[in-house]
Structure formats: C-alpha cells, structure tokens
Amino acid sequence: MRPLNVISNIVFFTGLILKFFHIHFNAIVMLLGLAGIIISLIIGSIKKIERSSLLLNLANFGWLVLIFVTVKFLPIQMPVLVISVLLTILTTIIIIRTEKSKRLWPLIISISIAFFFFFMPTHERYKLLSINWNYEIETDYITWDKYSWFLYQNGEFHEALEVSNNARSIANQLGDSDWEEFIDMHNKAIEERNWQKYR
Image 1: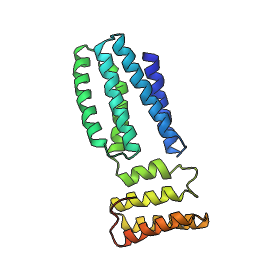
Image 2 (image 1 turned 45 degrees about the vertical axis):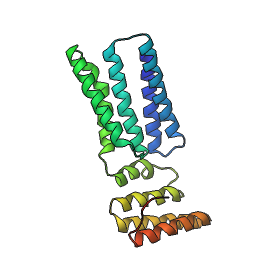
Image 3 (image 1 turned 30 degrees about the horizontal axis):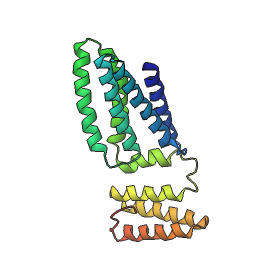
Image 4 (image 1 turned 90 degrees about the vertical axis):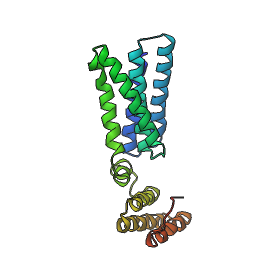
C-alpha cells in the first residue's frame, strides 16, 4: 500500500507542476494520482492496516482534493476544506496519542500548499497557474479572456478590459471570428459593469 500511496502522491504533484506550464492533460495526471490514493486506501482497509495510517492517508487525500478543486477553480472548495479540516483534527489527535507526530510532516506539507492556493485571490491564482509560465500565452486568447473574467470578479475593471482587448486582438490575428464575437460580448459587459457569468 505504501509504495502505491507514495507513487500516487508523486503523480499528483507532477500534474500540479504541469498545470503551471499549462501543459495539456495536467488535470488527468492529477486525477490519476488521486485515483491511486483511493486504491491504496481500499487496499489498506482490506488488509486492515493501522487505523492511524489510514486516517493520515485519508486526511492527506482530502487536502490534495482541495488543491485540485482550487487550482481548477471548481465551486466546491469550501465543503472540501471543511471535510479536510475535520479529518485532520481527528487524525492529529490519534497520531499524537500514539506518539508518532513525525508522521504528520507529509500532511503538513499538503496543508501548506492547499492553503497557499486557497487564500490567494482568484485573479492572482489564475495568473500564476495559467499565464506566467504558459508556453502558448502569446496566442492563447482563451486563457487571456478567462483571465479578464477573474480580474473583473475581483473588481479590477480597467485591467480586465485591457486583458480582454488583448484577447480580442489575438483572436483577430488568428482569424477566429466566433471568439472575437464572444470576447466582444465580454468587453461590453465589462464596460457596463454587468458581467454576470463567464459563459
């Protein structure tokens, strides 16, 4: 079980690194890592391994799920956070009682990474994950357009309009008239302060 769990964690964080560079299929790699952890938990339950180990892996799984839904901007971040915190409290109590507190370090690392992304403003998080090291960014008008949405949501209206105009310019250069129209709708919504949803 332990080797599978370690490998699955490595796979998950590899997918997270790929996300920074906007490399395709990064989400699938992260999901494969999460699936591997689930399998290791099932195997551990069948083999009836130590309860503290199972809880530790389950709590860590919760924080990795939080990282995933946060970097993918999914709307279930708060419920996942609450569940992860409760699992962590239970796990910490049990492990401290068994005087094996050193085993909490991997969990602390996952918690730190999860909180780093969770508490970052969405527009800054999106820029970090999808703009800064995106190897396609000079032609990626879709990513620029979505970045304008996150800027708008955080009240950065002037910056949102500039980014949206940049997205439209790239779409125009690449001859994508459908996206030009779509971005024009967003431009108008930004100017009128009436952008209710991305799509």
